[in-house]
Length: 177
Ligand code: S3P
Image (cartoon, rainbow, N blue to C red; front, side, top):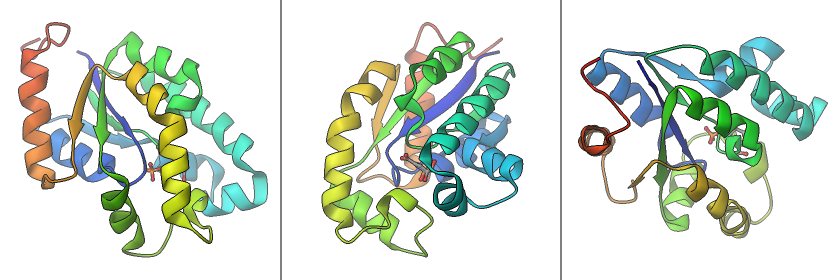
């Protein structure tokens, strides 16, 4: 049975929606960032600070490689997973890719609440960085996406419901098997 991989910018709700979706579909939920932290034995900001982004991306590639071999799981990917094409190729081998979007304003609001666990947005002007990174990454996300859902105005449950509706419409995803 195919995996369901959630991609999208930071703050688009991949983790919260992924957990809800997994519950609704009675599947296991996996988050790539959590696996990377377990593997590295430290938190994401520490990996970025001590080892650098390139090391983080290498760990991300390794984790995706392992996960893509599994079946029937919901995967919340880190926002930068699309930057390495190999990740998307591997996720697609046995999975469908759901792209969650949100407006930059909504993203800023969401990532500003709670402590900042996102090293890429730990900058003087996060609003500007969000816009720049989103603009750069947009074509990568679009190219990878099988299904797209705008989460800006939706609650977590509504996003999960919309994904299920779109999965049912998608011929490459067989719900019953
Ligand atoms: C990143 C997103 C983060 C995390 C890391 C890098 C990115 O995950 O993987 O901080 O490059 O967009 P979330 O999208 O879950 O915040």
